[in-house]
Image 1 (spheres, rainbow, N blue to C red):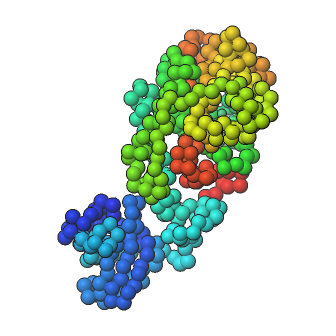
Image 2: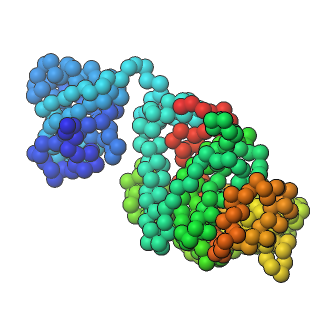
Image 3: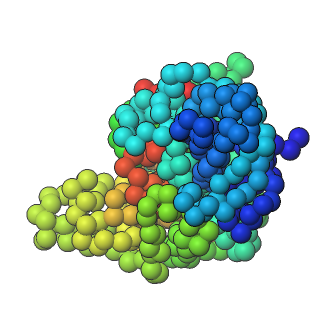
Length: 434
Ligand code: ATP
Ligand code: MG
């Protein structure tokens, strides 16, 4: 079936006289009596279809004029250079088919210039995504993934998939969604952490996974969802510094890929993308606290997770991506390796965008006895981690890795207000549909 030979963006005035077929949505119909304009919108933009009664005949003209907005249409016609038309061409149709008529009224108006409520938009997401600026963010997200996969592939990092239905918590937390799994209790996985580490014990050496993570936390923020896509990496015979370099290269690489390959989408979003400079600054947790206290009078206890005030101060004063390193061991998970000579701090790091955390990573504990000890110190029962701990008893390479939130990367890259703008069908405390 051929219903389209070109996207609107692939046609230009120099194709004058050529026959083309376009397919898309009836964006707008302007009726001027003996002549009417149908603006056809597809993924790449808009094309002006000029309907002339004399050329089309009375019946076709009448039918075309009465097409309801947002109906799906196919137009066959000839390109005509027309300086006054948007993009410098118009289409003189020889055939118009309505493939699927849209009912009236529309649940939301995709041509609407005024922003409507996020909830209304999400309720009718299929219609919302017809808006070019909404679609552009998801096309850019796909380009980000393409860039990351390409980068990993070039570095010899293998893509893997680990289970999302699991028997135990990664960090023993309560933030898990229980599910029924035949006669057993099971959960949706909060992170591929334990599995990717086991793959280091399997000799896979360098792996990445792009997949969903589930967090049953009742947060109500602009940067948390209950289901998110995480980009996870784990590398053997590497330390925290090595994987931080991979992380910053991957992030900066995604920016340049988007800047080079998504010009049209960036134009739709009316933005110029600045590629972050490498290397990102490294700031220790302790120094960050001192700075926040000296300069902003923040009062944080050493050993507390960064409060929003401190995070905001750091973001504003640094103004670009940075790494927070050398965290207190007490607030990083048990699998984070403490410094040998100073076990109260560890080789964990966070990648920060001035607005928020983008990724967390670490050099991991690969010594079996130390790992068991760390699990106990966190008040967890090593028996519950037997499936994981086994992989550490028969030879486990030293390794390091990280997890990066895809939507946070896209949201900060495109300066989107809410993480929900970077997720097609977001899942939060109140939203399970659509
Ligand atoms: P935060 O402190 O911002 O809640 P976290 O430290 O709990 O995040 P990690 O467990 O370190 O998150 O997960 C690694 C990355 O995955 C985060 O840096 C973030 O980009 C992403 N991520 C984690 N939880 C969520 C969530 N609920 N919604 C969206 N992205 C998330
Ligand atoms: Mg984190």
